[in-house]
Amino acid sequence: MKKSTIILLVVIGVLLIIALWFTSAYNGLVSKEESVTAQWANVENVYQRRADLIPNLVNTVKGYAEHEQSTLTAVIDARAKATSVNINAEHLTEESIAVFQQAQDALSGAISRLLVSVERYPDLKANQNFMDLQAQLEGTENRIAVERRKYNEEAQIFNRSVRSFPTNIIAGMFGFEKKGYFKAAEGSETAPQVQF
Amino acid sequence: MKNIFFHTYLYKQRLWGIVFFLSIFSHTIAQNDILDRPNPPCLVNDFANIFTSQQKSSLERKLVAYNDSTSTQIAVITINSLNGYDINDFSDRLGEKWGVGHKGKDNGVIILIKPKLNERDYGEVNISIGYGLEDVIPDVIAKRIVSYEMIPKFKEEDYYGGVSAAINVIFDLASGKYSADFYTNSIDSEEFWITIIVLGVIFAVVFILIMPRKGGRNGGVSSGGSPPYIFFGSSRGSGGGSFGGFGGGSFGGGGASGRW
Image (cartoon, each protein chain N blue to C red):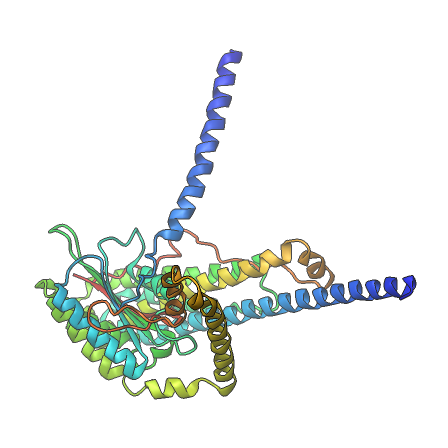
């Protein structure tokens, strides 16, 4: 075999290897980003689930605790604010997640204040409908914690490959950006304490 | 003067060193906070020793039989300390780590009990429902199982009675949703053939490894016996039944908890 043929073959081989690596690295980033986006949808779902419970909760409490009007209004307002913050799953940046989280945490705070204030109404606490709502709310808070944790894990996997060499070259070329995390703000990681 | 500065410098260095090591240390602890999966796997894991051995094997038999016929895995775990976690958080992480339920169906249930250790202590119980069973056992139902089936009996220290009652309710609710037949049929043919090929290759390798030894030495054959056991996940049949192992199910925070 001629020397030039060998060189040609080697060059083609090397190019092929580079092309293969390029494809697999790019596809890896795409699939990791897809996992983050899918997990974000789960996060939105569980927050929506909580928002859906609130009208029922407010109505149940209203019937028993008419003196808690201001607490109830606070919950309704916080819910309106929280549901109005929607993030495009393409732009899960540090800032947009912070805005989302702030609105949702404000709602968490309002709900827990409401649940504390109803402690004074024994009739309400003994109401089966209210007890069921409390169980659902508690379960939803758990789901929020779980899905947020899973989102952070997926985002971490993605961010690691975006930032580590040599995949970061491809990430830079095609504009893959680091995803934001949920932060454990004071008390936001723990569900509102419900006493029975 | 210089001496003092030097000392504070050294002190600071040391402090940072300590902080550094503590952070690494606490990190590793955080990783190991959640119990490791038992080996061999069983469905009843009584780390807090609240069941007698008969009660334990009776529960295990019941749960293994249920797993065999419906593929739904219900794990009962008792533990004396939650290492500072909320009980539901601990339970979800544990379920995820052990993989209770089957992958793709997520039909696992965890009943986690932290018994009341003394008069000033309080007991805690949590039922975690895998993603796939959330519609048949919604939070409200889980809450009722906790408050009406378990806690009244737990208050009288009848842990076995409470757990049995809860398991019976869960059996009724989850029956019909998944059956073992459904599970075997749901494996698509492609996966089936890949499994056959992989098993064939493993058999061939084992065969080749064992063959020449038969002629010559009879020595180290006994050690060759263990890998196939691991491959096929056959348990050694501890206690009542022979539980095949956990299947990689996932948990999303569904369920309910209570205290007494």
